[in-house]
Image 1: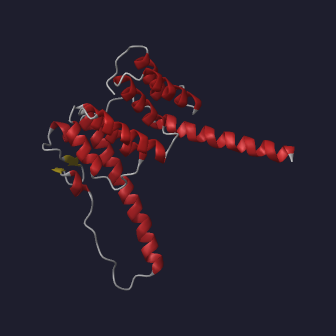
Image 2: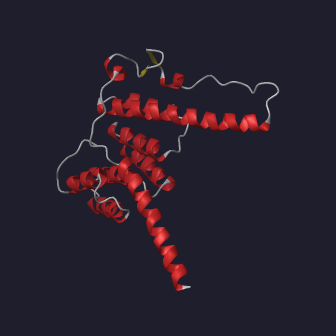
Image 3: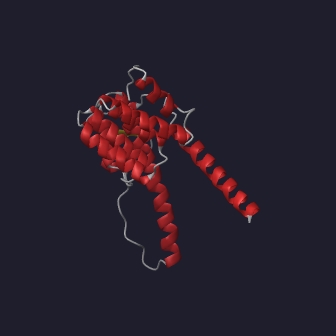
Length: 209
């Protein structure tokens, strides 16, 4: 019985460590995005489409919907669904990357437009960045709701905790920001950008996030 309990505890520790490592990688945002045609050539919030070699509206990044072909089987439909999910994830990745580039260029409205075009509006990274750009446009209260939604989807998403902590500092809630710093540390993020950036802000060093 004791051996079984110890084994379960070990597995839980390994699982948490793996999760923390994944979140740590996602939280390392120290490198600014490289400016592309999205911010150097495109206008009106359009995004550079490398395949088409032209600027397209975020909403047009999605392929046109098609009806199932006659004679397809359930297996065909399932395969298509998996392929569709993969395509949607790839498009969301491109939209998120574009939103990040817009944000670094100070184009927060364009960043929000790109994020709103994403398929998965419940993706924690999409919600977190919705919060960031909304806050940068002056609506801190609404921005906080996005951070909270991101953490409802994934309480271990330490990047959202870091961004929320920064928002709390902006509101004068230093204690609340410290709570988020401790949460990041306790979830295995002490050696990440998310932790360091919030710690620096609490120390009085202003950040751009």
